[in-house]
Length: 337
Ligand code: PEP
Ligand code: MN
Image 1 (cartoon, protein in one colour):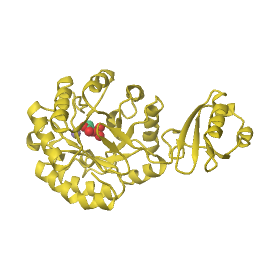
Image 2 (cartoon, helix red, strand yellow; image 1 turned 30 degrees about the vertical axis):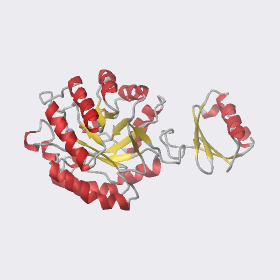
Image 3 (cartoon, helix red, strand yellow; image 1 turned 120 degrees about the horizontal axis):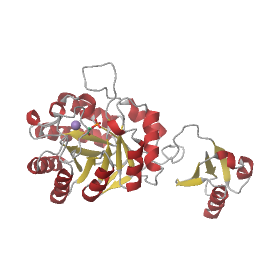
Image 4 (cartoon, helix red, strand yellow; image 1 turned 135 degrees about the vertical axis):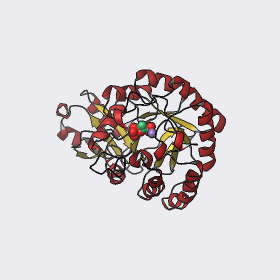
């Protein structure tokens, strides 16, 4: 449930309502908009008396929230959330571009790719150090050594860094070297991992599960935020359908749905969504046009010899062209890089 306060309710009135709710053992979350203040309530609502709350000074109305996710819900927090990562803010004013290899392969490879994506305008370098591969015989990542190269790329090129984490040890190691944690599609409902990422306090990029509904995805985000970590960004990366022409089916409507239901930023990953490099640029532009807050794009210096996801990786020249062609889309969306 949320309590909507009357416009310009004084701080003391808001505080009194919060205290009345908290005295019954429930949690309150404040969202202060330009006009109205909203008090979100989490917990067993049977413990409070709606009639009494309704009578308190400056209370406008009590609105039940039927969705199971609360802290993620736009009704709880009508203003779009801005997530600060390193020297950058992910949110409605910017177009965030995270680019880099699927996996960190060598120091030279990562440094070269970081240099090129920076030059093209990306604000983040991405690269997996822990790779959750479909086959146990595929390259599994350099682990901590890979994280060290990410830290080096940050230092050398001033890029923000993001790496996928697959367990608690990876979270602990990543916290030492990178700016943002990624929870991959395969772990979207690994609730223990979600809670640990929440406890880390680090910004988290939460990818949509392989066959997850938007509702399940927002509930997964709720696990992170309910640990006291509001710094969550969502990433649409395609879902399983009957179509086989692409690796997954990019669900761009998810961007519109998420914007309506949640205050969290959402970015799109057209690389994993399609699995085909030639589809990445048009879908990146479409993502910006339909309101996405950013993009995650795989870029490789030598896609033919990439240790993973070569077929969907852009060469430097293609990525650079895409970044130039996207400038108009970014401007029309009212954003800046
Ligand atoms: C990735 O971004 O490296 C990745 C494995 O993506 P996903 O979890 O979306 O498959
Ligand atoms: Mn990949």
